[in-house]
Length: 458
Image (tube, rainbow, N blue to C red; front, side, top):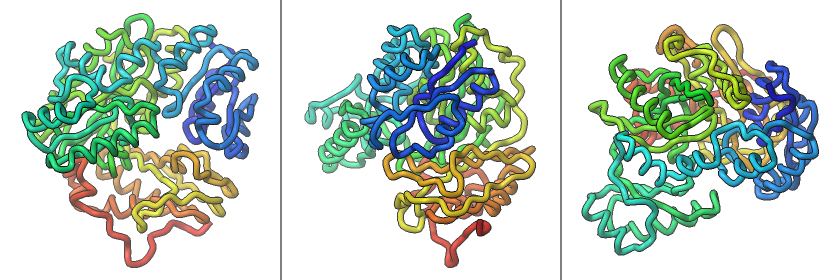
């Protein structure tokens, strides 16, 4: 097992990885920007080093600084969490050159699967169903127009290096194609330093289904079932649950076998996620692969009893998976609500600031993954995630009712949060009935309550 791991991230995921390392007897090294000096992962780590100014480009994305601290601290491995450097093949390659284990797949696999256009080609060649799209990245507007006319509108523009909904635009007519293409490129360049885009046929009202996979260096590959991630706003996930209400045992077996076959053939190792779009007839299509742990890994943990982060670390250290596919039993239903520092009443306007009071919910089946506490300041420089409320129930109905109860207990003052949004969402009849798609919030616009919906006063 590793002796010391550097956590190249911040916020709740840094704390999540730190706790997994502690339970495995591994010493931890935290890095932090000047804006994160008071963050919990800094306080709980065995060692902590300031890496630079608040902007991510000057701190968490600064590879030379990260590697300097890793070498100085004599770490065995680096865990990138999600976001930042988690899917950067150059960073993974530099780790390898310094004989520091990158807790994730190889640089070659990240390049193959991290680039969406390349990943789509790879999966198509392996026989995985894919949505009709351009042959890789495109730039010639006339050729793009020709392709869109032949394919038929609507189409969707996607950043090839994208994630989190950045660099994505739905185009419903030729007249808006050129302007939307330029906006997608600009956003992609700002977010990923890569303005490459490709186009796909846009599926109306699909479900976003993803499969959690784990693979070790000994040829063992498993999946931990699927997650339903269809409730989104501008391609950003807001609530996730597992399992999906529309998934039958037959469909899960079919989709799971295709996913495992593909993972084996590409030689993947570590934790990863295959993301799919599913239509009303249960036809599924590969969308992308995330070569890292994801925000919503928690719901898979809750229904399987498997600590995915600890397993990810053990696999990176050369250990075989501690279970087979037949050992995995999925029980009950889990829901994750992303609690962000945003004001849903004002079109989800960011609400950075200092938390004055904080009361976390508890009770049976309730889990909070958060780095927040009274007096902690949510900085304006990063993702606005305050924490994740994760709830388990014996079935979906119990999970919904328990989540409603937990949200009513959740009290945060000093900043605006999305707690009230989730309380509204869980009361919508179509959500309760499972009638959801990626366009749910377009068809069911959030309506601010007449009176503010709040939790207890801390």
